[in-house]
Image (cartoon, rainbow, N blue to C red; front, side, top):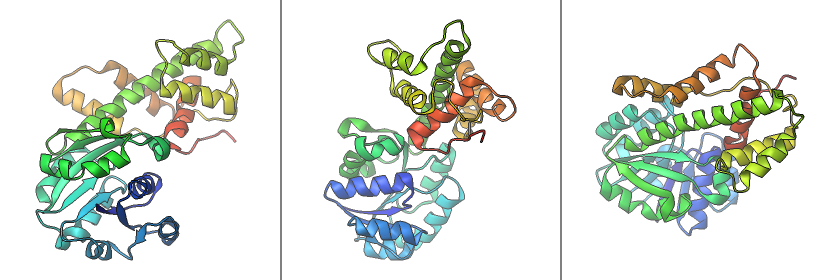
Length: 298
């Protein structure tokens, strides 16, 4: 299969590399000349522009967008518009709001797949978890690509119609907020409690057979190993918040109580004004799974 990839940031480059390694042909465009040169050195065909990318693809175009959610997605679709028809497929692999995805699916001449993507930079080796919404025929057409990008056939599925992929990913991120908050609070009590504990040892022990073992807990272990039990200079500033906000807003519209997710979102916002150990750990965990910048005190 031939795939066009627009956006070669951390996640987009992983998509392009995994698809290439699976034996497919990739044509890619990025606004960064350096990113394009690096991709070309890895066997990916560079494109000078989005129109050039579209022209290099075959009659039935399959294109994966991995650009920042919001205006960048609409701008890319506008440039692609003259080159697309109903036989083409466009995948939006970013963290778009599900209502934007349903709008784009209605407006786009091609079949539009909204693809919630989870796994962070670790997906370069392991593959991603992909939550896909949109037409069933388009999903089936892209299954070889999804198999390559995901952890395998079990790592992706069609969630339902347009918007459902990003809807499921939105809720996934809300759950992620609550899990990070729970680990943070537990380790805060251990850190401030009555024993002088090695928190790396605690996390390692929990990760070997305990009920609460998980990848996030592995990242806690990594954080304490690399930063120390007191987390060194890691600041109490947890960035992000948009997908958690969307989750809480949707819970209010649907009248579904999400107290843990709401509390975690509130803690994240409060981290910009008051220092807490639990939020310092959440700050470091975001680096672990997404290689997001770690705010530090010095």
